Image (cartoon, rainbow, N blue to C red; front, side, top):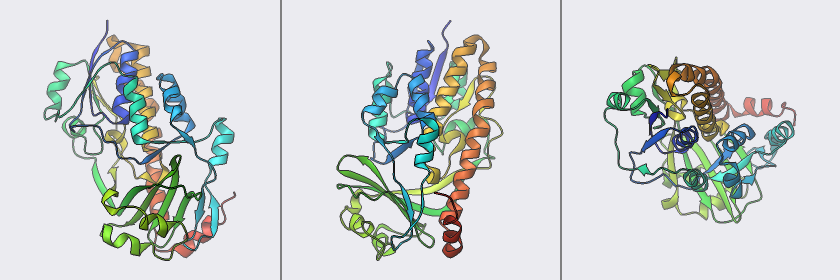
Length: 343
């Protein structure tokens, strides 16, 4: 007998969860508080493990149509000297496939195309407990400020700021230079996103405004000043770096509630694993539910929590640690350590 589920949040994790539940034969309702999906054009890096999860959800082929391989990323100093390589070749060698980059809108489109139920927009959930009474399963996929988490898991774990903001944009030209440039207390990153365009992000102290951003990177190696000069500040997106702390003791509750993605383990973006962990959560949760069935949901949620919680929290901890390392003011010591890393 099919179960009834409500997924709160229509981001990557929520849509992937809905797909997995529908494939397992569940009746699914998707609630999204926004009037439309967030489609700003940042690039998601999708690790081979998350690519395999998309394959198991039946979305892999559609995802790969618009994805680009990410190779040849370097870590540089502001004057352009290469300190180290990103471990992209090692990832590809071990997994047998490369890291892939995809624009957020394209990934959302691939997920939406695999769904056979609509998203209900402008649905601001104010009573998560009532949803748990109405449905067999409630999935909180509603991001770092998750109302489901606050209502049903308490407030001990909450949003923490790290003192840094990231400005994100897309340049309408290809740079041929990819990776990150690390300065003192700030860094700048560039990745492919689609032919003819470059995804960029600039991490700076929290008080930095859009008007100040170009000054923060004046004199840095090409094409960084050129990217900032050639993109309209009105198109830049400001993102406050935050994470969930302390780590949750469980991702599930009462045999009928589960958290996925940022609702469960929001992390700083330094490892580029936010979308990956959300996809892995969704696939693991729905695989466990498909294996145990609606009649044994408690066992399914326990299996999901056992598979994903510690793994996701390790990634979150690693990302937070990397942020501290990259954004330190003690850049000379940091750079000396980076140069010791084998290529």
